[in-house]
Length: 178
Figure (cartoon, rainbow, N blue to C red):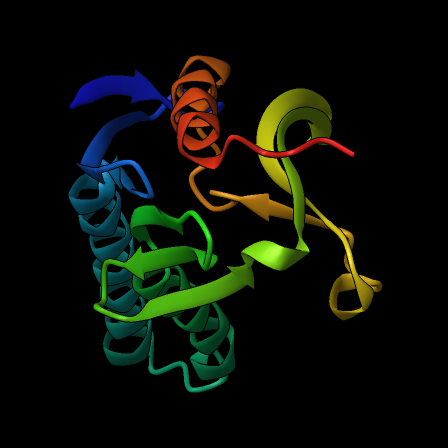
């Protein structure tokens, strides 16, 4: 387990869950997920308190609509805090990317290895700054509309984290360059 940071400065854990000659399972965990959810919950409670004060003290019913939007946004943000992202690479089968949210939902995507051309670290513009991301270059007719797929796109690990993940992926892959 290695303690590293994201490109925005948040603390993450990068750990190799399982590694063999043909299988690699990596996990990138958001250390600050609990703190982020707590901060959003506190902000939501303050918003609800302000709503209650305005309704009961000032008898304002017009402000109902003004408080629905911030509460809706806070609930959305609260449920979309990223807990962890993981990669499972089975050498001759597929690469699975999973994103686990703090509310318990998990999003998975699977890229068959026959469509993987290479895995690279690329620099991209994100929020008016340059960050590094891990990307899969795809080939074949299945990925014609989306030839580049970004891995670990929610937590956005920093370059030091990406170098570790990149070397581990390539040690299992041993890609044949055309």
